[in-house]
Image (cartoon, rainbow, N blue to C red):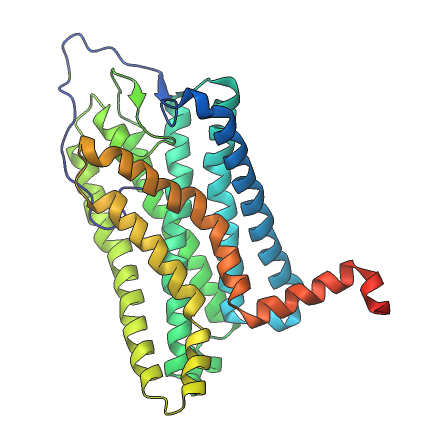
Length: 329
């Protein structure tokens, strides 16, 4: 998703005219250079996908069913789990099918559609992480004003704004990308349709699209990233001022899960989209892309459940309801 942070303005559009032929299909190379590992990779990514869907669905179910989790923090967490379920499903089923059938082709329209859906979910996640950091800022730094400012209406508005902004940012980019003509070679050295590989295969003039993505980076992503950084500077400063060790630990525990998720998410994105796009870095970028597209959605429910007492309590409560024989013990 190239409008994250600052896009790499390569301006690599192919010259129009000549004998270039428009192509209708791409070949996603993915991990096809490891033919002897295909079955093992299939089983590995299948297990990851099952755990991702199960973990995020469980978080959503707990947030909906347990009254103790009907708070702003868990409302946004439920939205985040919904986003991660969606964008895992945009990439992994297609990847799993290619492992079994060895068919790595995808139509140009299908590739653009996958990029659109994935970039939408990724943009929504960036917005939600910023909103969650603001929620933690109010809870820790402005506790007396928290209930008033982060009311039910405000939560709905912030969540809606996150979804709408992500959709708009992606739609603007994709609407321009969909008008492009693509020429050979038709191989994409990635496991999903990302922005930079598509731009490199375009025969059209890409200057306008790359300029638009650069502007969208400032409008959407940069303010969200700065909000997260600013919020946590204020949070850490406030926590350090708490006199008792117990109080500091209690305050930090309310935001530690979110901080871990944000660090991993933005850390991998910076590596993938900010570092130079060279032949040496390409395989490394592909590995780090696996982190934020495949592993993060699986790890996040574990991080929030293992490090959060309220989620653990709701989970045990739900487990006891599902296991009636525990009542007699």
